[in-house]
Length: 202
Image (cartoon, rainbow, N blue to C red; front, top):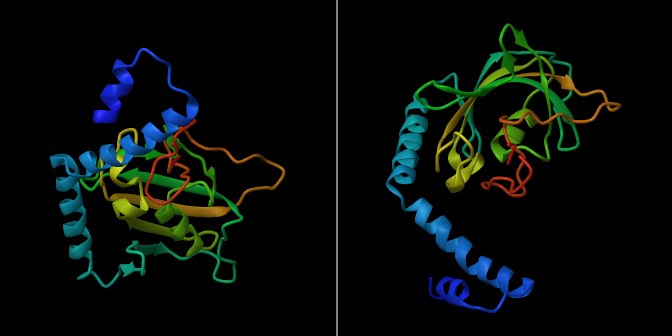
């Protein structure tokens, strides 16, 4: 805060190097403040409780990372699992733990698959897709650290554990460009944080 006050009170414009140095000092403090906020602490507790309850449900599987999922329908057993290099066509619905929908590929009566590059979605979403084959349908419970982390995202609070109903349709035709739906599972530069720009770590 001392550095920030000095910068704001200064009558001399900061050069880019100083601005980046200041940003490097402020960002960790902001993340720490968000992580210690009542909402973030409450969401973390709710997520942990929800995931702990699923441990008693034998239909769910939990990976080493903490991703928890249930296979709703098996697709092409002879098909290949998706890889990091794939752009996958996915039908999905994203929900908060209370069941409220925050995003979906469904638009009215239409439910068209959306293209997602596995390199540009939140880690839990990518991990789930790599466990899937064309035609698979799953319910995935993604803990905050594999979703939008402590920063959250538009419509998603800090430290929220999220539920995704996902159907992997298949790999996108290479001749087409990936489509990122504005509020879908956001691309991320690194696990846990939102993509700075442009808009949804879709």
